Image (cartoon, rainbow, N blue to C red; front, side):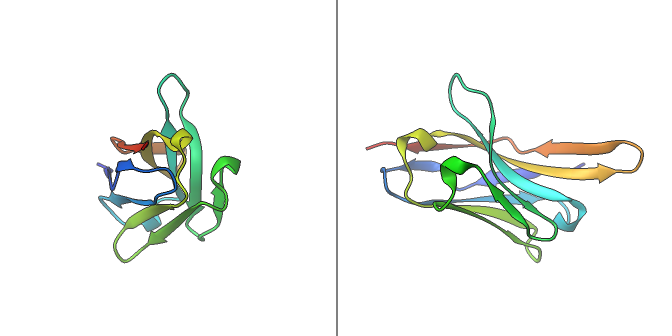
Length: 120
């Protein structure tokens, strides 16, 4: 059973920083890609950043230059460093892992989410 567990959310002032971490129950090498998504109240879940098993990264335009995604294979974790936070970054942030399964194709796994609130 694949499990992803997020940590590191909280309340921060505008302009502040937070670091989110996602711990996988097994090796992150088993994932073709991992990433962070977020969902604000009344909005659809949206991609924030992804990183492939080859460490190729992709970011939403709204977070480019402010957020950095990274992976630590030794610790089986994926992290999201968030700087220069804005009130519009307020959302529940979800860790995602994608596996390519034989004959079944792509399968996505999700964590339970962690709340990030940017407010003074």
